[in-house]
Image (cartoon, rainbow, N blue to C red):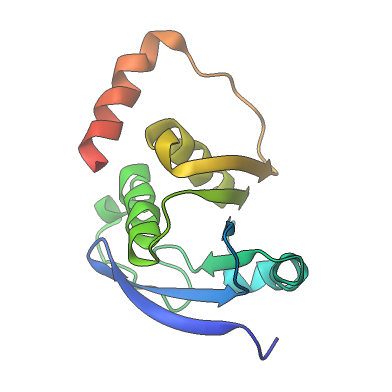
Length: 148
């Protein structure tokens, strides 16, 4: 566990705590659920980094050592997906493998819908699959354009 590197990065107007381990051409980004932290992924980080992956697990907005803006209006899906996009930019990552759990799985799913250009593959746990409604396609496009 001592090998895990912790840092704080300025992303999307907040300071985000990030835990990282490993090096390699492929990165795996873990998004925790409620009421968890990056720490939930420590075992997966150790295992995958030993297999040659760069592993990254942030504390999401409002959790752990990441800033918690006081206004409830600062916690929309667009804000949090924007945090993840800004995190990838700050880390110099074009695309990642993403793993989400619970609340993090919801964010990961929205990330894939809004920024499919930034994702290699998605694994979600503890979230029921709901097919996208084609009649709302324009809403997703508008939302995606808002965070680009």
